Image (cartoon, rainbow, N blue to C red; front, side):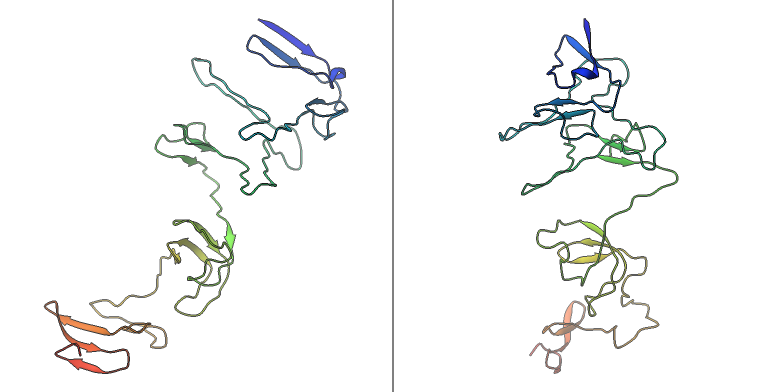
Length: 244
């Protein structure tokens, strides 16, 4: 097996990585770069290595990395590491713009799991986030009402979770700061949900907010032995012993 070295003074030369040869890149100065499919010097003077894929064919990629060898232990297809004393260290930065649908990163479910803070994600979890000192911070949005999909708009996926920062809307569709999930409308996660009427009695009720009845043009039916005994119509009529 051959090992080839490319010095930084060959930064504009073409090179390839094949199945039977490895290329070791050595750089003596950050003032020089390696460019693939670019004209002249690299477009970004801050990058040692730059690849441009100008193809307009669907499914093409800029860099394709695959590790298929059978080894004993852990194999890494791609390893990104940023070290050194800096104000901010970022090992990987992904962005996608210009398309109808822009996805910065997609991890397909092909039997693998994603681990953050762990090298051994649980096999039953598609995403395993592990930490003893940090949590998961979900997106913060300002909702306007439980029956309004703004600011996300049409196409909200059932089960979508957000943290609402606003106090807005009119009862019974008002929202207050807290976690909400979408189920055709926004439903609030709360340890103190809107009070229910209990069969053992209720306390602290406010008749301006809490009542027994409907908020649309439907009657109230009262039953015993599963037979309707009394009905209050939408216009306020009280019918006993019948429905009309």
